[in-house]
Image (cartoon, rainbow, N blue to C red):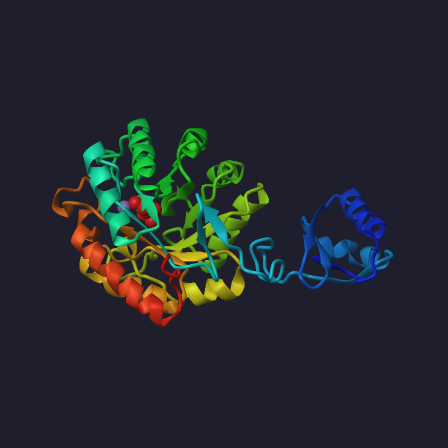
Length: 341
Ligand code: PEP
Ligand code: MN
């Protein structure tokens, strides 16, 4: 429920409403809007205190929030959120942001070579997994702490902020000490203990859509993070599981404008995991830009045939550079690129 305060409401009246809501067992959140001050009410069935609240001095109206997610929804927060990741802004109105790098950090040389190349090609963020969720327990599962160290070195050299995955609540502190942005992967999109832990990590979160998540489930996962204190969530559409096996997943591009209308959070697209085939990455990346995404997450490897994970979907360094040229052309036509310095 949203309590709308009248323009004439005094500070004392606002405080009184907040106190009242809290005493009734709900969580009030003050929402200073461009138009008027509102107070969001969180908790189960807040409609039961509606009549009491509208009778308080200074209250104009109390309106229900129709969606099950509250804080991540547009009803609650109409203005778009722009998330700052180590100085790179992601969201509506900010320049199109491209995070690129290997699926997994495999070695210092592999990471540094990739980081230099994606920086030169125009990427704004470096991605790379140090802790890798793998379907098989026998697959390469990342270098762990050494991988984080290489990521920090690559950032120091290139200036690119780092996005990397965290898989368990116990790792959050260690990964957050290095990462500029924590990725929650598709397999953990409904790991509520992890969502709670990253809610207090103090770093922006890249929240992948769960393998079989509806849009509503995905936004509720984001709500878990935000409700635990972290407002800086970027959603990432990375394909969902369908009956189709010709592609690794099915890219749901309609999620981009849909999320845009339902939520104020930024939305980026990962055409690599969505398709599983490097030949499909470029067309889907451009389609994502045209659909209004705020950015991309693209896997790039100096030698994809030798990659320890996700080689078939990884672009070569040259392919990535050529993709970025296309992104610049299309982005310029759509007015989505940063002004040249
Ligand atoms: C990844 O980004 O390398 C990854 C494992 O992604 P997802 O969780 O989308 O499969
Ligand atoms: Mn991958």
